[in-house]
Length: 171
Image (cartoon, rainbow, N blue to C red; front, side, top):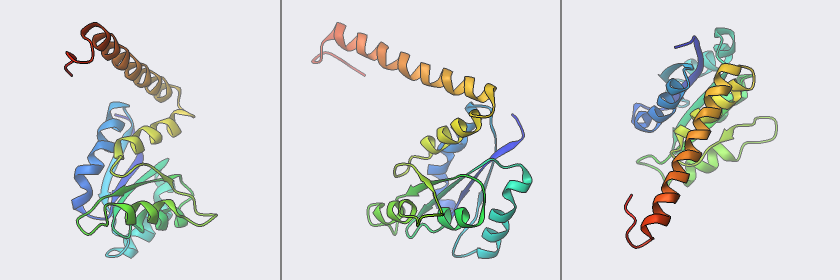
């Protein structure tokens, strides 16, 4: 594993089951990660220190997952020069996840947050790998291989479907 380049943060430990998908795919790409809880509402001092210093510690991309009001990604983006990828999470106090989605997606001009689909931490990890891969050929090669494997898997399923027919096809 390489040095830490991606920080995965979340507002609560209840977000961890979703955010583990980002960690797993980044480890697959051999990108060093750190994972921690940084609550926008309950630990604002930690949030400010984290966001203002992450780039000084060598972090290249921040993935921030949050549910409910979901202020974490936007607050981090307002304080950090790094790209921030927001993962809206459908939490127990959520309105089908729409509150989280819109809180992260609807950022004002000047404070961008790249936003993935609801609970799509894996996609956030892939996007972080692509960002790092734009400057690191080894990571870029692993992303290319990953996407090639996705294509092969679909083509294999297509051949199986064509051979078996849609009525007999089994996953």
